[in-house]
Amino acid sequence: MVILASLSPRITPGQATTPVASDSARLQGTWKMVSGAVGGEAMPATYLAAMRRTLTGNALTIMRGSQIFFQATIQLDPSHLPKTIDYHMTTGPTAGSIQRGIYRIAGDSVYFCFGGVNADRPLEFKTSPGDGRTLSVWLPLRP
Image (cartoon, rainbow, N blue to C red; front, top):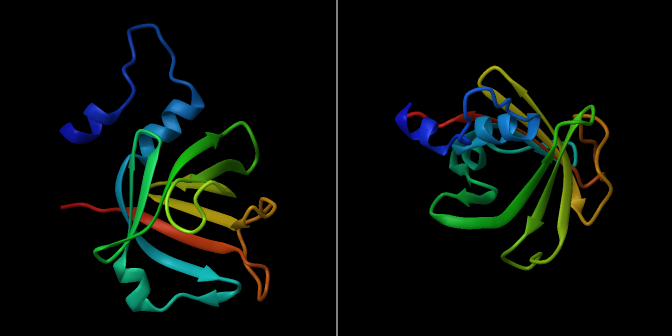
């Protein structure tokens, strides 16, 4: 809990948190993937077990085992329904591109649905064969 508190935005008495700050604070730290699908196909259990995401500020690193899968800076906009998130890719073959998505926080879980790189933003949490979308569910990694 001490670590999470230190990563939260500093709020002074009488100052309200913004929805962006609130969602950003809830997404901080390391998460494990518990469910996922790409183009309508479920990800294998071995793949899910290897995936981790760590958000520090707005810097995101996605790991697959001990390898960096990709890195990005994120931009949240909780004023939309569903809430929107953009990955501004900073490493790898897609560096410089944008991946547009939507997200939902429910209890301890966070749900994401992303279009392909530089593709349109999904409007709902689903993926179908050939659509190039990624749908995933993550839980916080607890020691």
